[in-house]
Image (cartoon, rainbow, N blue to C red; front, side, top):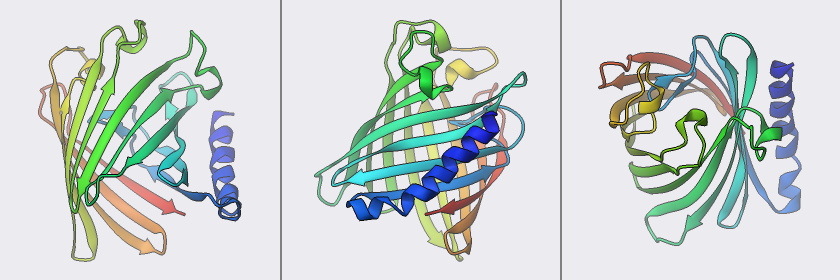
Length: 229
């Protein structure tokens, strides 16, 4: 049932993409299959995942949702992460602020017993360089260790060469520290190296390698196949 739900959601994204332009609203999205679901240097579980994004835009405001299948062993679920982002008038520097809600049950997002967390972010970029800051404020709950606040900083570099897109992301913070086998309060660091190449129009394959500098963080390789629209 959970797999069917995510497939129906992704189908809805494709249908909506043909309707929104007539309403004067921009739309973009993707459907992606990954060999392993990795998030901020931590493998979520062993095995592949089906993921997708739907983003709607109007002037400087965009909103939408990222979704993924997840499997923690006992049961398969669907992660649904609504987000909103506002672009800022900063000239040649592309910058924005926004918020994301991470949840494993969209319909319980605002219930007291929901498995969720709220995150704020700010991004800036110029040419191949990018910088992003993410902050999860204390939310008065011991669920997911949210009785404390957490942060995550990413500095990125991207370039095109040899018919492919190459990127490196250096990340540092306490966000992933709590997901280690032995949770810790000290910040951890990881580096993600990626290469992406187009196979067909709107279809590309990516190769990714995450290098963790903490002794508890494993080095992880995964692949992705993405259709964007």
